[in-house]
Length: 269
Image (cartoon, rainbow, N blue to C red):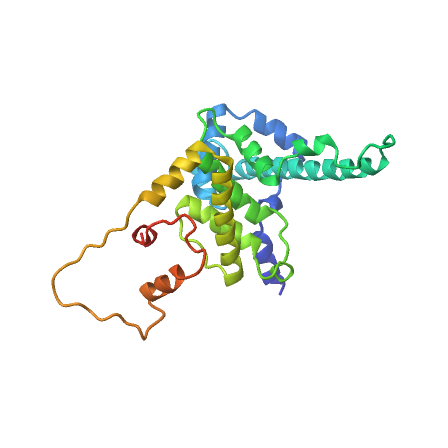
């Protein structure tokens, strides 16, 4: 058990990296040349924080311990910002009950509540501040935000959410935006993802966002095409429901599976 426990500890996320005090680490990292910071950030986006071999190849002038220190500092900065935001929100909620209101003044949330950003927006802001000067497309930042939310945010248990596994859902969205094969979702989580995408399409149309509306209209105008070849027609293996074709046919029959009306031949790719 002790050996197994030690192996699990070594596989924990980057918060377990040994480093000096946060002040000393930050001071040392600020001395790095700008081009090395850029190369490290690009390597992190490409390989992730576990692949120290490739990270060290990106900045060979730094030791692996220095690279761990830099990654750990970035992670601490992101978590500190999230915790500070949560504390500020709790303080504002407490102040709302202590503020004396005049007679006839309706009770309601403070006007400052409207300026509070959702956690996903705060993650995006942190990534935008840390990205290199040339910048990255918004979708590149969004997919990394989904990955970090899945790994480092506190998610409720699926038993408390009618079976919806938010941790796996955010990881699935990251894989979907990155073009990677995602993990299979349980029926409850898959249904929630489909409903969320359908609600998003309705929200876009109600708001009249031109760029997104143009994309939805283009997708709906795509017509599916089937190419037929001569020769003997093969019988479909109806008895085997575990084949990819059989699974796909059953999947597209699910209500609300394709809210954007994407042609089926595109979904197969």
